[in-house]
Image (cartoon, rainbow, N blue to C red):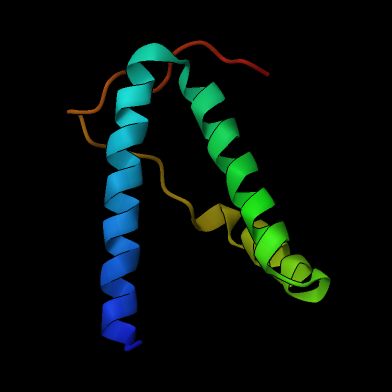
Length: 85
C-alpha cells in the first residue's frame, strides 16, 4: 500500500473516530472518553506490537507529550467540564 493511501486511511479513521467521540461527549464526561480512548489505544498497541516495539511506542508517546496541543475550536462542546482524577 502506498504512503499516500496509508495517510488517507489514517485521516479517514481519525475523522470518523473524532466524530464519534463528539457524539459520545453528549453522554459522558470528556475525561472518561479520553481515558477510554487512551486505554483502547494502548491495548491495541500491546496486541499488535512485540514487547520491544510497544516499549518504543510508549517511550515516543511520553517524549512527545509536551508537543500535544489542546483543541481550540469554539464549535466544540465545553471540554473543560468536571475533573475525574
